[in-house]
Image 1 (cartoon, rainbow, N blue to C red):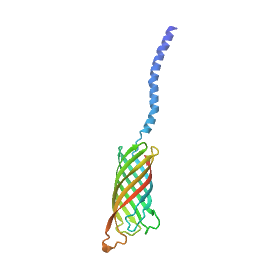
Image 2: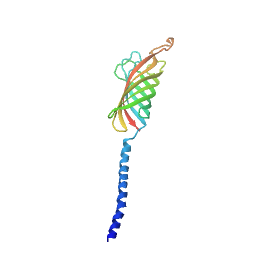
Image 3: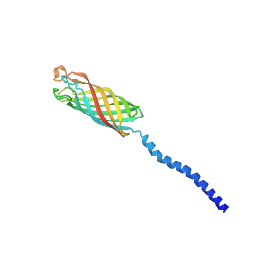
Image 4: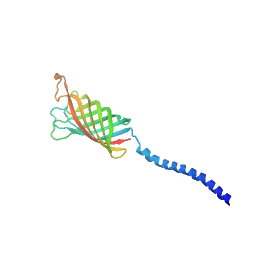
Length: 202
C-alpha cells in the first residue's frame, strides 16, 4: 500500500513539472498574435480626395480652382518615403471668374514624416514634375513644375487616416492671347494648393 502511494506521488511530479512550461507556451502563443497586430508596419499608402489650387497661371483670374487629387507613397523605414501624385482642377471657387481655366499636374518626390503625439503625425515633402494648363489656349501649355509643402495626418485606425496638406507649386505658362510675335514668352507663377484626403495604409 505504501509502495503504491509512493509510486503515485513519483509519477505525479513529472506530470506537474511538464505541465507548467506547457501552459506558459500556450499563454505566449495566445498573446503573440495580439502583439504582432500592434507591431504591423505598413510600407505603402494610397490616398485621394478634395483638392484646391489658386489659378495665377491665368492672367485676369481672381478665383481658385477646385478638383481632386490621388497619390501613393512607398515608405522606407520609419521617417522617409517616396511619393507620387496626380491632381486635376476644373471648377472655379467663385462664380464669375473669366474664361474656363483648368490645371492638371503629375508630381513626385521625397517625403519625411514622423509621429507627433497620440494619433497625430506630420510630414514635409518636395515635389517635381509637370503641369498642364488648358481651357485658355495658352502656349506653351505644358511646363516643368515643382515646389514644396507639408501637412498633418490623423489616424482613425491602423489602416485608415485623414490628411490635410498645403503646397506651393511653381510653373511657367504664357499669358492669354500671347502671340507668335511675342515669342510665346512664358512667365513663372506660383500657386498655393491645398488638399483634404483619406489615406489607406497597406
